[in-house]
Amino acid sequence: MEKISRISNELKEWIEKTLNSGAAPELIVDAMIKKGFDARYSYTTIFRIIQNQPVQTINNQSPYTYELPPIAQKGKLIYTSNHNPIKVTMRMEKPFILCLDNLLSAQECDELIALSKNRLQRSQVIDAATGKKKTVPGRTSEGTEFMVLENKMISRIEKRIAELIDYPIDHGECLQVLHYNRGEEYKTHYDFFPQSKVASSKGGQRIATLLMYLNDVEAGGETLFPKLGLSVSPKKGSAIYFHYGNSKGQTDRLSSHSSTPVLTGEKWVATKWIRQRKIYE
Ligand SMILES: O=C(O)CCC(=O)C(=O)O
Ligand SMILES: [Fe+2]
Image (cartoon, rainbow, N blue to C red; front, top):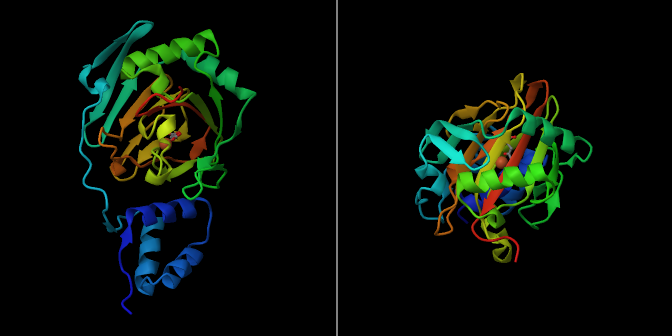
């Protein structure tokens, strides 16, 4: 029987997730061989994935069609009703990424950190197979969530974000604050859900991420986009916006990213994920 020597995007994604959760590479290779994959191909593929090198996949999604999100049409200085203008300091088209300065004031950053400190819990990821949340070695940070109207400051920030990105507040998941100690990281991942786990009743797929940096990190803790060779250094009050979902329901695989281990000091971020539609009825 002829051995299989190509993998699908879904299988590649599953392998990445399984490796991130700490599974031994040899076990994955064994499983592939049992399923009929060529042994040599299985070893080299897993090795390449571990090394973050490109792996050829059978693409069962047609190429991603880029559509400009509303934030892309706002120019270099973006005005909102409750803050100084937000500055665009870097822009990339494919995938669509903006670096933004002056999104949060230093006081807002400090308050968000202070409010989060006594309610942190170990961060989780969504298991591709079950759709349920679980803790994994590849995501070692701690985090907490804030309800949209939890307090005056959160409401002010939520309003600013909705004006900035031009999506209704109810397309946004609740604000998450994450904390990384020295050595902690979040390995390469996509923010969008595996296609089979998209809950159409809960706003559908994630389409964009706004990641706000709440402190300056002395060393390490960059947000790295390995397929682009791009890394963004945390700067207190600044943010990155990246968009990876279009109106056809496609997702942009160039948007994979990680948080590199913090080398000195600690790292605090706040994340806002945007869905295709209203999340709450
Ligand atoms: O902390 C970072 O720089 C990245 C965080 C992230 O990717 C996420 O929360 O999905
Ligand atoms: Fe992410």
